[in-house]
Length: 43
Image (cartoon, rainbow, N blue to C red; front, top):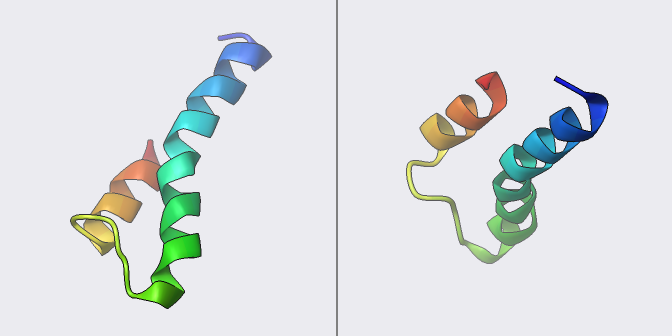
């Protein structure tokens, strides 16, 4: 896999994590919470 493709794949998987970190102080969480974060980071 080229570096460009690897970048886009990692960006797609990291955007939900970024949104969760920004919204957590306001009381919003991703559906599934910790399990969703675990699955996104292990890929």
